[in-house]
Image (tube, rainbow, N blue to C red):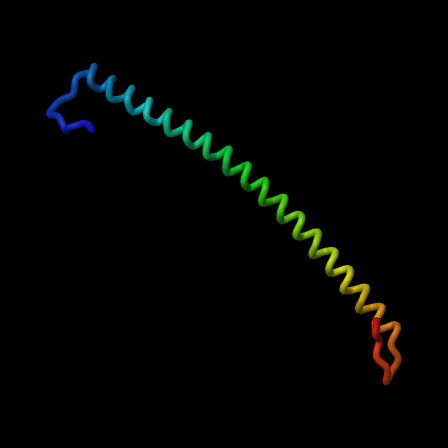
Length: 82
């Protein structure tokens, strides 16, 4: 860590700037790596949601068909059994 100084030379300021730039470059690399990992994980989650949405859609259709079939096949006073 840098200590407070009464005055800074141009050379010292250049060293400080270079060190700060180097550290930010390292942070950028870490974020780039992390961002790629996050993107991959979200892609997996998106695929899982697509699968779940498809299964829900199929269940709704099955339920609707079963409901329609049971109301068509029943008469007043009787029960529809499969």
